[in-house]
Image (cartoon, rainbow, N blue to C red):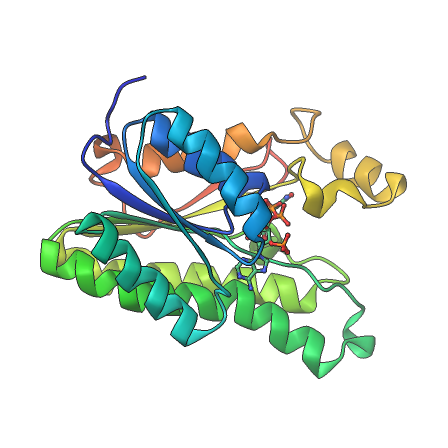
Length: 248
Ligand code: NAP
């Protein structure tokens, strides 16, 4: 443990399980105090227990990241609790797959709202505090699918491509206040989100991964750890693919 993040406060969305949970635990191990949000309260309290056992402070709040009132409350309560926000990891995301011509407006809207609008809302509200503090590290979790597209995921790939545009714009707007904004684009990672994919789809993906394995949640958390640490201070507006070489 390097304690690179001592005295820093980090908000991580979608931290009840999967990649978000691993990011929260990893940043706590680096010394940060942690605020976590999700709609799954059971999962949140389990993540919180694990963070507490590492000796860091933790605050959690049930938050639907697609709702402006929820997001504002999560950000304001975090500042009430810890006095500041230094790090924001926009991780919460969902899929509602369907072929384009069968996709309903609801399937489109929900995925765009949870995956993309949430990043706008959290960046807006947490960004205000970071601007006052003249310091911030924002990492947005996109996907390789936002770069390469994927049949059956018009809504998801559009949301993840939107995150990349939003990342670059936020990076330009916030740089003058010493805030960096980057994206991580995971490939094919072992979580609940990918657990139920049919075996033939998993095999098809893996055939195209030069490193010949699915990614682990730790692979993504390690990239985020770098992007929120002082070691990445001169990196902003970038998209780091963590995909075993799937897309190059
Ligand atoms: P996951 O296991 O499904 O976890 C996502 C978490 O977000 C869940 O706890 C979920 O709660 C929560 N969530 C869903 N809707 C929410 C909302 N409206 N407000 C707050 N929280 C909400 O997913 P994951 O695989 O860890 O993925 C994390 C991120 O990585 C996502 O943005 C995903 O798109 C991205 N990603 C994943 C992969 C992969 O292969 N797994 C690849 C590329 C990108 P519920 O359980 O209650 O729904």
